[in-house]
Length: 208
Image 1 (cartoon, rainbow, N blue to C red):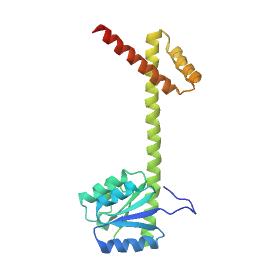
Image 2: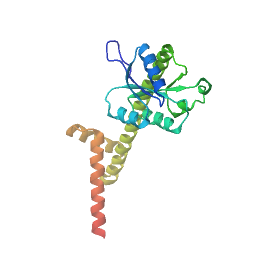
Image 3: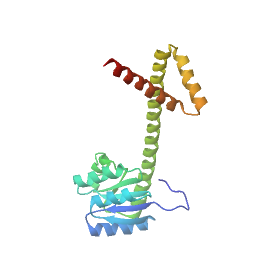
Image 4: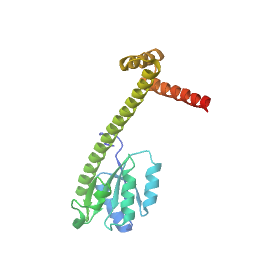
């Protein structure tokens, strides 16, 4: 989400049920150097807009009223990988127990708003969002590697049982098939598992 100099700026979407506040937030956001793409007074319309968009955004969300509808909006936006979320809170609600932060907002801005506060909050939100996205990617890769390892281990066990070979020999067989057929070891393991399941089903069919 972080933009390098010379590239298109991050676009901002603003939500507040108060028209006057939306107008004020637009002025302050643009003075801070950000492009406001659209304002919203209905949470679902913002969620739908973000879902259709193919560019990155910052969502500036008026969370001062502490309604469940607004916190649901923050959670829905945080589920989108292309949105960093900043919550607008009252000063009294801005501590560690902030409900906007608990809902997933990456940064807070306090009412009344000024351009400098917006710049700081947006910078924090973008940093946290990028960091979170990177961690999620790394976690996804770890999960994928673990799942692939389990597939290969399962295929090795089947080969050891069917061909009466040792674990290293079973591994080398899968590795050789991978090299000979120019396929990944996971693809070879999946083929072995599928073939073994087919044999088991055929055997059960004969015995019934």
